[in-house]
Image (tube, rainbow, N blue to C red; front, side, top):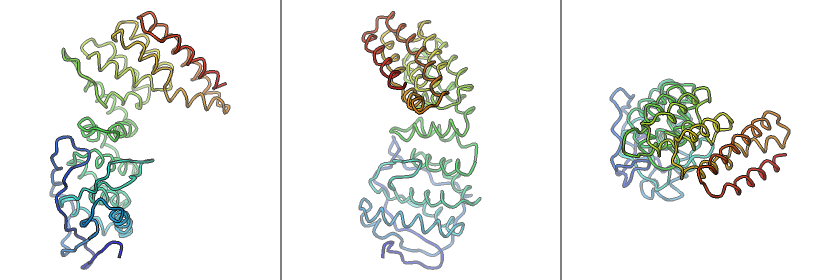
Amino acid sequence: MLLGVAATGAGIGLLVRPSERDHGRTDGRSPQAPPDHLPSTAAGPVDLLLDVRASPASPAAQKSLAAFAIAQAARGRDAVPDLVDLLRKPDIDCGKQWEFTDGQLREYPSVRAACLDALRRIDTPDSTRALRSWLDVTEVAGEAYLVGLALSERGETGFAPRLLDVAVEADGSVPLEMVRLAAVSDPSVTARRIADGAPRGAEDRDAGVLARGLAFVPWEQAAPVARGLLEETAVTGKARVRYAEALLARPEADALRVVREAFERGAFPAKAAGELAEHAVAARAFGEDLRAAREGDSAARARAEARAVEARRLIDAAERAGAEGTEALRSRLASRLERGR
């Protein structure tokens, strides 16, 4: 039997052992227990997912977790209290990384991840409340992102600040996706957080993943923040370079212009000139517009051509600052444009 389930009534339970490691955490501590106002169940004890407990890293465990999430989603709102009870229990680490494809988990890193995935599939008010309550207490980036996706799909708002709180303390690729989701769901909050969170002072600290939000916030909200951060002398040099890299990833020529003008004012160290110019030429957004232009998209062609003008100006500024390899960058830019025609 795939799930290895013995059941009493409608409730479910899980005999688990504490996780040996907590994916997404950087300090080794486990998340807090959720607040008491989460719904609970009085169902009797049950031993669920025996093969997960016996061999959590096995392919059989992944099959069981997938079947479990589907089965609980099929129960609908009746499953919510039981899933919350499982979230309260010590987690089982399944030895998988938090990896998402098109917003879907590729594998379950833990039993808790399967519970959250099941709650994501149950679109009811009590499920939404449970997800919000879990977001308030989890410090695991993957869990927070999974909850954020669920809330976004339901048109919920107000969760971006907590996503950003968790993202800035985590490592890996998931925090970047969390910043992207926060920027899409609440661009104004994300823009303010980027501005307020800028590293300032004598210590040359990096801006971290939060800086990447400038690539995702709509340009009308990103532009004033970007200009302010690149003009403010108290912002560290490393941070300004990170903000510039995020801006150079955008499709708008105006974003490149902001970077170039800041560079000409001396906002970046001279040694960063060549690196920034290379970012301007190699940006994915530039390539996407060039591909669309080849297919007849006139708006994409106009963006690409305007961007190329600013990229040339940035290369010229880099050359004046003594950067090496500027001729190669010009050739690369010309080649990309030629392929886009």
